[in-house]
Image (cartoon, rainbow, N blue to C red; front, side, top):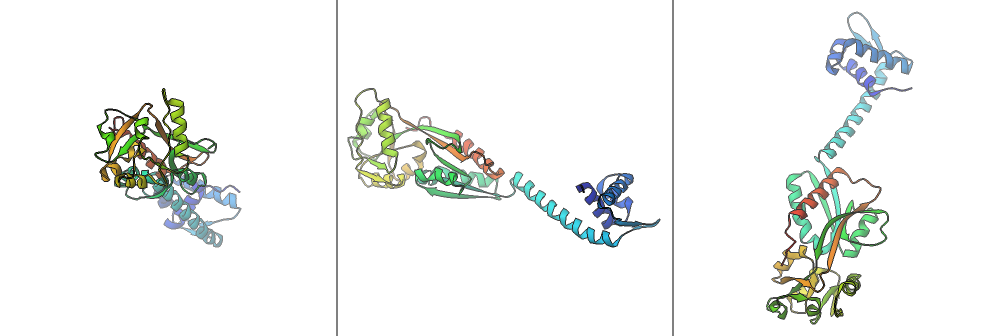
Length: 305
């Protein structure tokens, strides 16, 4: 039994209008086409749904019972189609994103604010966490997308490059580093270094080993903290210096700190937008990621000094 939507819509239109002419007009089809759809439906069901006479039509007992079912089916279907259309046209939707705490307190709020101005009906839920935990949120399916640095072994994750930025020296005003024309890594590590916990220091030491053309500066952090905002606060208090990426400029300025390029060697970090490889992000999330890329592309991070 293969009942079609066209047959159901023809039947409910006929029941609603009480006549073939008006029902055909409401569906923008010919009267003969409507009559054919009703006959096909009755044939499929094996029962008569409509009693016809020369003046008007009348639903049979089976037709009246089937009409309530057909009406409910079409109402639910139309509601589902409208919901999908709203999602597709960004009239509704939820974006769930995880980002490292520093990015969640600098770049991402700017992106959310400008995105909401364009799409006020879309909700954006931001989860701020440590760098090492951000990607894990998408791996576990707790968010739609995560932002994080390159990590090995993420075979089930799609990685969309977002930006590639150099490390910068961050220090308080009046610090001896400020008088240098060029700041080298060897200059930075002469002072108490505040670094992030986890893989930050090990990866940095490995990059220095790979890229240094002369003496390799040893990294021995005086403090290791969970969040870069904590490191910046400690730098502001005169407890040391740190290395960060240019997207933190707004928070660096808020603390009244200086940010200068680090050289010999220039070490860069690439960040990606991660999502599960075989899961299609909803339309609202896709639109937010496009907006994020556009926002990053507009930023002048090429010469942040």
